[in-house]
Image 1 (cartoon, one colour):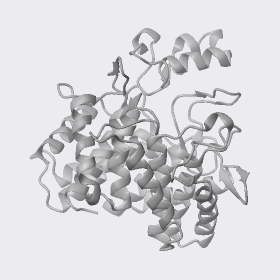
Image 2 (tube, rainbow, N blue to C red):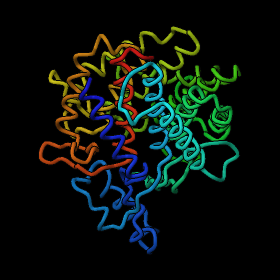
Image 3 (cartoon, rainbow, N blue to C red):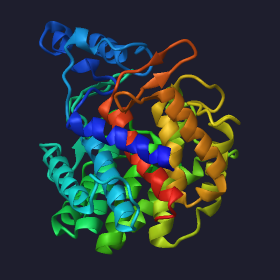
Image 4 (spheres, one colour):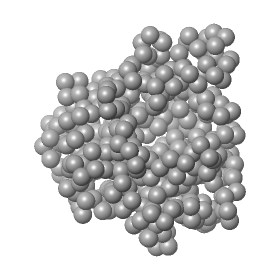
Length: 402
C-alpha cells in the first residue's frame, strides 16, 4: 500500500507540474507541417501523420520533430477530475496520503478541474458535449475535425461532473451533466442492430457501429436518470444495453464493432462495456444482465492477463502491452465490486506495471511496450490521466472505500 500511494503521488506531482496539458496518442495530425500546408487537405497524409504518433507506428517519439503542440484534452481532464474526487473520498474516510494533500487542497483542485472541463465543451451544438482537441482521420472515409463532440469523451465528462457534484454539492456541475443527456438523445444518430440500435460515435457519419461507444452513451442516460428521474432516459438506455448484451459472444467477449474491420477483441474496451452495464444495474436494480457481467469479467480476467499479472492487449496475443490494459482492470473491478476476490491478480498487475511501465525519476507512465521496444513517451490523456484515475480506484479498493 505504501508503494501504491508513493507511485500515485509521484504521478500526481508530475501532472500538476505539467498543468495537466500534454501530448496524446495520434496527435501527429495536429502538426503544423500538416495543418498549415497543402498536405492537410489529403486524407491519406492526415492518416499517415496520425499513425506516426498512433497505436501501430509510434515506436518512439517524433512529436518534437513535427512541432506537435501540447494541449488540454477534455477526456483527460475528466479522468483527472474523477481521480481527485476519489482522492477526496480517501481523505474524507481518514486515509493519510501525504502532509501536503489535505481535503481543502483537494477540494480546490476539484473546482479548478471541473471549471476547466466545462470550458472545454464542444462548440456549435445546442447541448453540452465534449470531444478531443485533435482531429481524427478514420481508416475508411470518415474525418472528425478537432473538438468534434463524441459520445466517449462526453461520457467521461458526465461521470466526472456527477462525482464532482457529490463532493462539492455544486448544482452547476449536476445541471451541466444532465444537459448532456439531450446531446445523446438528439445529436447522435442511431444505427439499427438486429432488434435494437447502436448510438453513433459523434453527430458526424462514421464509426457508427462500436459497442463500447454505444454503451457509454447508455451510461450517460442511466446516470442522468439517477439525478433527474426522467424515465425516458432509463428506457432508451435499456434498449441500448439490450442491443449490446445480445451481441456478447458465448465466451463472454465482444468484438470492437459491427463492421468487418472491427472484429478484434481487446482488453480495455471490454472493461468499458462492463462498466456501463454495471452502472445500469446499480441505478435501475434490474438484474437482467447479471450473467452478461459474470461472463464478461470472467473472459477479461482469463484471457487478457497471464499468470504473472502481465496484461494482454488482445485476447489471443500479448503485444503491444498498452498502459490502458494495465489500468482498466483497477477501474472495472472497483466498479463491479469484485476487487477483493481478484486481489492477488490485481496486485500482480500493479507490480508489473510499476516495474515495467513507470518512470520513477520523473513520475509518469509509458505508452506501450512491445516485444523489442518500449515507447516511453508521456501522453497526458492516454497514459497519465488514465492511470491517475485507475490508481485512485486501486487505492479505494485496497481501503474498502466505495
